[in-house]
Length: 100
Image (cartoon, rainbow, N blue to C red; front, side, top):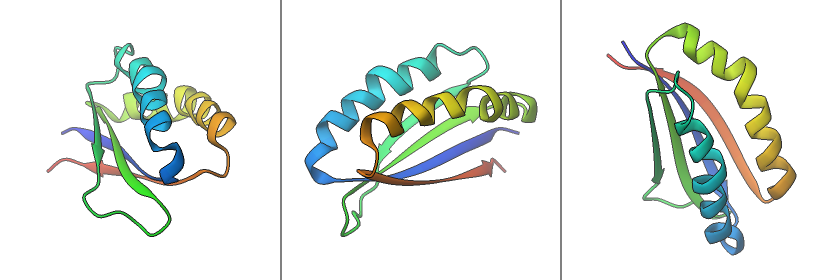
């Protein structure tokens, strides 16, 4: 059973390319270095919202403990980085999915 921490982002069009670069070079690169992360998927959602471009970031874990470790110790730091750089220029929401 794998657990997927999915975050959907809606990003202002005028920062889209810069934001993508930041996500790849900072956020996702950091995640890929963590041994407890099994996989990372970064995708563009086919249907955009009126407020901007929509993306999904899925971080895959193989145990509930790994997911909890991520949300308790790593996610707050990553969220702080993205908020510091792009405050009020994006929206996001997260959910945890269980593979069946």
